[in-house]
Image (cartoon, rainbow, N blue to C red; front, top):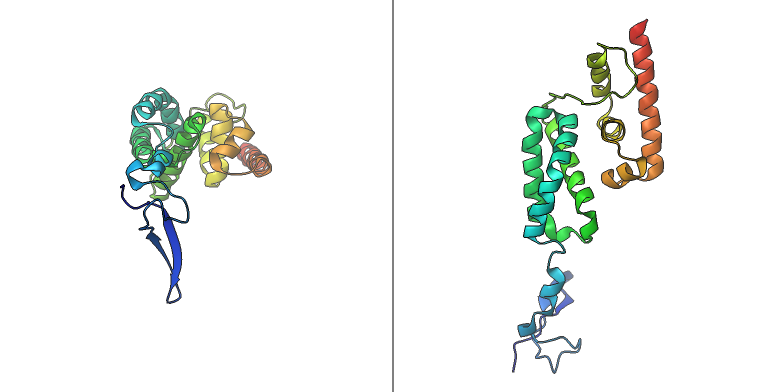
Length: 201
């Protein structure tokens, strides 16, 4: 006869919710659970992307992640941020539910890691972008204006104009709705335009 079933039961003990395993034999368990020797729930917890596939697909995504991180925190910190992204992804791969969403999931982790770097005060940024049509020699001034945007607005500008992401894709990456992304990029463009024209006066 096999071991006890492995279902969990929730009960109230002295006003506290408690979780405990079911010690019934399979034949007597009211939930009809399988034998613990069969480990039915182990299959449910198995990651949809295994470590080997993660390594392969992360290697393919690495150049893109480094370009994005370089835009947000600077080339000198980009490699470290991407490495941190890989470590987080390896540790949390079980949270991924859709294998097709791996690249977007990695990008989301990388962007959050960039936010953490900037919160720590490291602001060496070199955008490989031209957000607006700018005369030659004015790129540095434009970069400084982009740097002055709020973090969320700056990220949207960089992802859209610097890396070609659509607003719907950015909404998914940042966990925002489409309308919010559209309003933020419109607000950022107005702010950049006003700052740019004031500098020319």
